Length: 379
Image 1 (cartoon, rainbow, N blue to C red):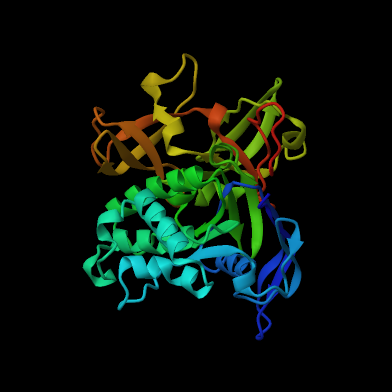
Image 2: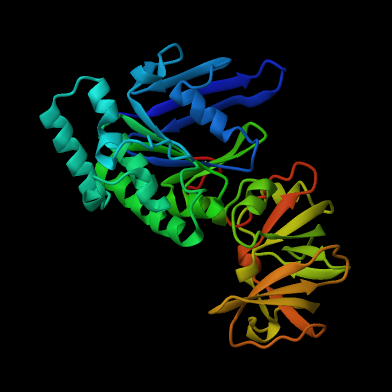
């Protein structure tokens, strides 16, 4: 078993700044866990404490059940892949991958078997005699991965390893990393600020902000059921739209009044938290794909007139930036490519409120309105 446990993990720096604020997190054996959040949220610091590259101010890190707070990095049986490739420029690909094994005194025959096997996994067999300067960025990152693989560690730690690659290579490497981790059946922790990487790579993702964990769940759960407004705004491209409103109830129906008095009828599954916020200011969150032209709305649905500001054509779809009464910023609707919009035109827009979210105006926590049976916010 190679599970990794962060138990009330804390990090203070000498200047008094607290980078990590008592986080609890368990990465399961053979799980691909992604830590995601904006710069300065504590994700890299947490990873470096697992690796032993940062001192732990409080709490524990346990790897495979063993406390490792005082264990040297080289003795933790983990392998770290950094943003920079950190390859030895005077060594061939083969020598770079074999270097750590030679330091450990691994027999030559075993080194050769491990390096050639890793090279085969990473499609580097034909590159083994080349120097790093003769390789592309993607190939160099594969060599860095190969250097980690040959050690056969209990866990892989990735610190934004794809950020130096162009968009096309990042897409290719995401696929290769996910496939590699599955084939090796090894525990992995991956740090990124890129929510696309988080959504595509992670078995689960941990969303962090200001040194604290905001939500831990499978990517689809975080996307569909964000715990608070920060998670809702950070996960998703484009980000979720937010409209200030007032929560009301009449004749058994819940309504959120937005855009200077326009009612959005809510499809409510759990009324408990809504009842405590009746009559209060709230924020309605709706993703771009859950907004539609009113002509496609169910019969009897209400719509809100909005003005087209800018249209972004994305190939098979388009993003329409809309202005509405009472809003200080645009909201974004995803529309089929076949629809035609003109800047300045008024269009009636329908909100599919079965997929809407209501956030408390003060705490900004979601007031669960569309939870599936048995779902817990943090899991």
